[in-house]
Image (cartoon, rainbow, N blue to C red):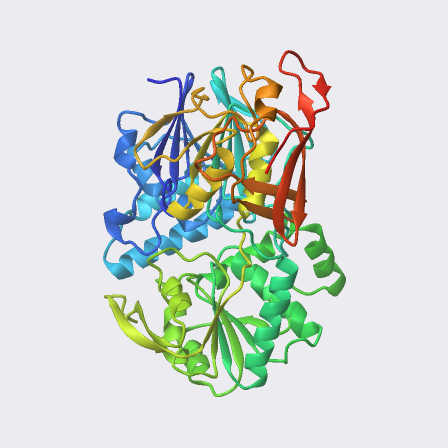
Length: 544
C-alpha cells in the first residue's frame, strides 16, 4: 500500500458523490460519502467498490449536505464497525439529510439503504469539537471551521509521511448563519492541500451588493402582485435567505407579504433554532433581545401540509416561497415552478450552484423564455413546462470563489495541490493560477495520486533557474499580449502569461508594473534576487 496518496471515489471532476480516501503510512482515512444530485439508484453512488481493497480505519463527515453524507449508510453496511467523526451540528443535520434521502428513495422506488442501515449510521456518528486533535488511529486529524454550512469542517491530517489540509466545501465570506472559514494567522506549510474548486473560474461579486440587488428584485415582483419562488438548498442557504428577507421586511424594503418555507427547509430551520448556541453571536444576540425565534417569526412561516401548499400555489396575492431542492431536480420546488413559471408577472431566483444537468441550469440558459424539463409530480419522469417568469441569478453562494480559494491554498503553502469538487472549466482555471508554483493534480474518480510534490513542476511564477545570470535575463526583451486581472479582495494584480512564453523569462526578485487605461504596458524588475545567495541587488532590466 502506498504510504502517502489520495484516492477519489467521487466528487473529483464533478460536484456530487464526494468521497475521498487517504492512504497513509499508519492506515486509511475516508472523508465523506455523498450522492450525485439528480441521479437515482446505484448511479448516484461514488465508487465505493474501491474500498474493498482499501478498507478505511476511520471516517470523517465534513458537513451534512447530500453530496457529502447521503451514501454513509451504504458505507457502514460494508464496514459496520467504522467510527465516523463530525461536529455536533453535522451530526444533527445529517440525521435530517439521511432520513430525507431514505424517503425520496422510497418514492422513486430506488432505495439504496434500509431503516437498519439508517439507524446504524446515526449511531456511528461521533461528535467532535473544532480544534480538538484526534490521534487514536495512528494518523492524527483536527477539524477546523470551514464557513460553508453550520458545522462544516476542513480537516488537517497528520501522518509520519507528511501533512495534508483538506478544505472540503469552504467559504471565506461571512453569512447570516455562518462565520467565514478559519485560517491560520501566518503561513502554515503543509505537504499537500486537497481543495474544492466549485467556483475556481469565478471572482464572485461582493455579497453585500448581491443581497441589495436580490432584495430590490424581490420587492419589484411583489409590488406588482407577483409571486417569487426561490429554490434553495435546505441546509444553510434557505435559512440565510429567510433572514435576508425577514430583515428586508422589517426595514420596509419589502412589502408585508407571507414568506413560506417548504420541503426539507421546514425541518432544517426548526433544527437550526434548536442549535442557536452554535450559530453566529450576532444572531444569538438578536434572538435574545427580541425574545423571538430567530427564523420562524414575523413574516416567515412554514407550509404545514399539502393542502396548504395547494392553496398557496393557487392564491392570487403576492408571496415568497423558499423551497427545496435548490437545483429543481427533486423536492417541492418543481411543484411551485410548474404553476408559477408560465406567468411573466412571477419570478424565480437562483441563489446557489447549478450542476450541468440541473433544470435550474437550463432555466438560466433561457434568454427569452421557452420550456424547461421539470420532474413530474408523481416522480416518474420529466415533462416540459413553459417558463416566462423573470429568471435571475444571485451569487449568494456558500463556496469561496477563485480569489478565496487561492488565498486559502497559499496560506498553507503546499508543494502539492489536488483540485476536486468542480467541473472541468473551474478546475482548469484554478490550475492555471497554481501550476507555475505548485505541483497540481486534477484526478478522475478512481485515480490514485501521490500527496508529495513530484519535483517535475515548473519554476515559480516570474522566476528563472539559478543557472541563468541576471545579464542574460536583462538582454531578453520581448513584446507580447497578456491579461492583467485585479483581485480587489486581496489587493493583488494577477498577470497571466501566454502559453508560448517560457517559464524562465523572468528572474527572481521584486517587480513593478505600469498600467495605462487598464492595459499593462511595462513590467520592470526593481530588485534582483542574487543567484549566488539571498541578498537582493538593484537591477533595471525590464520586459514589455
